[in-house]
Picture 1 (tube, rainbow, N blue to C red):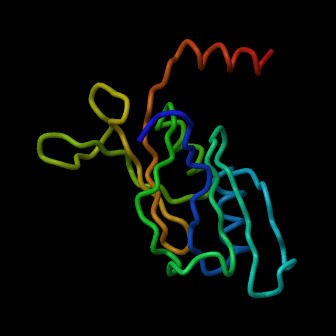
Picture 2 (picture 1 turned 30 degrees about the vertical axis):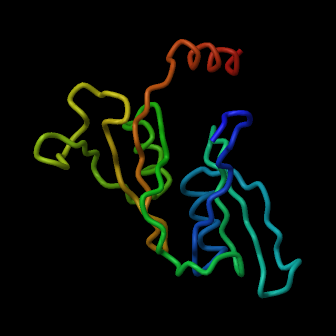
Length: 155
């Protein structure tokens, strides 16, 4: 495939049984931003709600009539954060049940943060009310660029 244009992942459908309950979980507990809620504009058989995690270019969609996947059947979605301890603490403060951090070592999955806190090395799991599973993953990006952007926002 030639690289003559960008291919961006911008929306992932997350199957849920109760749209309002899931919307409240993602907005009120996880801190996602509400982008779209079609309400009942398409009738009771159709509703789409789009939500985006803070700082993400990719949103999720929950709704009615938008997927054939059973509620709770999506597993392994990753939310990448620059500090997994801080990210986990924010979810816990919102009332989300988040597992203890873990990493992968020679013996497989191992409790605790990656010993060197390497990028892509530490994880913590949680799930939404339907059982769709997520992993927080610590990813260290260009720290200088991040610090400059954060300083600009604070100014």
